[in-house]
Length: 189
Length: 264
Image (cartoon, one colour):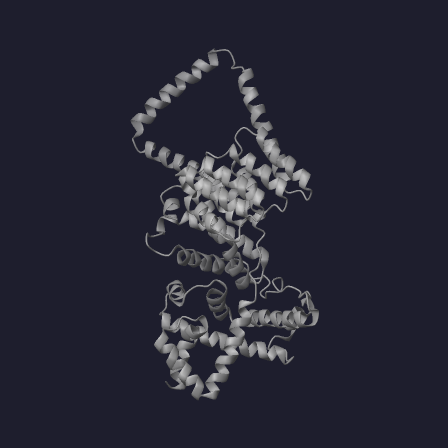
């Protein structure tokens, strides 16, 4: 990134190769919409170019990039209120593999967990995605969100607990608060 | 440790990042407190199940093309922007300079009015035609590289040899083919096509990045040949890793070792 900041813009291609997949995954979880996530990844790399002068030596590039990603996402939703809010597109249909019954059950559980994750409040979902899917340390998340690492640990614990509660509610077959949304999701699954 | 005291440590406990002494204290408490033990067990279950969820797969090829286009656009914009800034700086030098320039312009205009009309030379027409042909070839190449049929993609790769100076979009498409094309022959042809572009940093780096992702020994050896010849010391780390990777074919490891000796 230091080279990009200093004018070697072609090096951004390397950063794109390294990070576009992870950003896409993060943004798909956060928007529930693949094409929105694709648009946002492009937007983020344009912003990286635009604001490259603000990158500081010694700082974590990843944290800086995710800060840009969070801002881009917030701006995107400000201008597109009507966008599908739930991760309907992101929920894939489980397909049976070897040992079909057990596999099918595991896939169903996984689909339920994904659905629970999408029903979790956005800020809590973000914590779980960053720590579990993106493998960020608590310290990195704390820097990204501008809060103390201790507070992040407590929030992650609460988010997980809430995720588990939603997951168990869905497992019992009780639709949660938004019946219409859940029925639509079930049709997809 | 009391129940409320272990909560701040549970995130670290699940991630396996607890310090050993704290970890022991948490384990002691969990042995004594069935309520906390049940909660942690449930959370662990969820945590592990989360670990089985794979990432959303991006359509990298399409995203790369869009990115290359944005980068080109941005660089083009930068050039225009800096030209505009230069112009405004020049304006600041003063009206007297503008007046002098205006006099020169008027002189030139009068000269043009009296001189015979300029004729487009055959050379300039030829340049325009060449540019158009190059653009067309690039378009055909990009389209062929997207085809389902491996022979069409092979045609696309060989088409790049007919383009004088392929632009970044074609380069990115070739690197993408090298990384992801399922057909070994197409990947081998791509390596040959990329040799012509090996003076570009992005190509040399792309080839080095592609090497660990390949599974075919043929492609691996062709890539090692490429980087030994074109990248030299840039590839030392990659070659060293390959030469020590027991999972690789023995011939590939031997070629990597030989490559290391060649680049010194």
